[in-house]
Image (tube, rainbow, N blue to C red; front, side, top):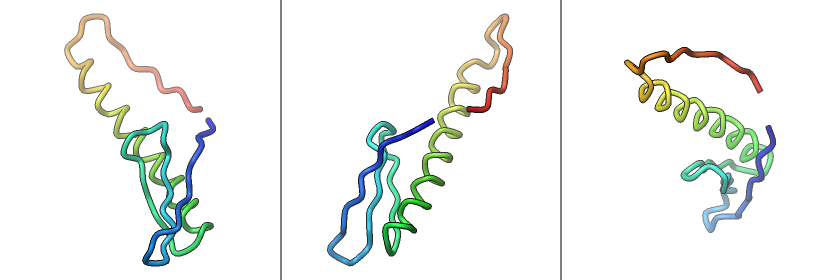
Length: 71
């Protein structure tokens, strides 16, 4: 998958990275490279957390099964 991210220079010298498509998915780094590495990790964690919420909401639902799909 591809996500658009924004990079903003903060007043303290850090670079803030954000993925607007994923509310609250924000990270930072000392430079652009580190900020991009960190937002990749944040996106992965954000998607995992949303998946866990979905799995919990399905618990006990009749005829429910899980299929793992890698994208």
